[in-house]
Length: 201
Image (cartoon, rainbow, N blue to C red; front, top):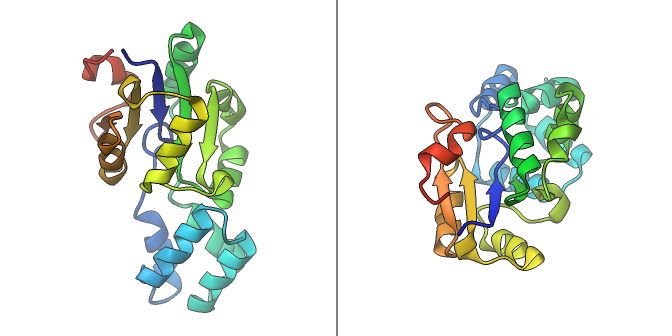
């Protein structure tokens, strides 16, 4: 029996354009996502780099870009948050049938943008028993320690836990721990169909 549901945020609740940042940054020079740059992004996602340090790293690569242009380009990945998904999680929370946890790889700039541009963010956040953002807990998916952290923090059993994420690498790791998973396709599937698509509920 499923007792806990863990949700990703991006492309589960808020829509993303994952190619947008590369597209925007490329307007200011030859921008490529090297392994070194990916490591900088990962460090920023776990709060090991400040926003100022993060921007400086990108200004070194794209000196023609202003701080605002870099910030806007970085946040270009973030699109809309359909209201029907808010209604879904509000209804689910009101039933109090499951422990609801949000587990998101994110960063300060993205969350600041969401707080300013999604007027019901605080309402959304209040639907969850716990709300974990990678830059605040200093852990990120798909590393196994982030899943072990959540399981231990809430004393929950993997076999009684269901995890939804649009990134297969993340659901693969969770599955290896015995957590039930749904690797949702944001182009063809919607979180509001959770209980019709999955037969564990």
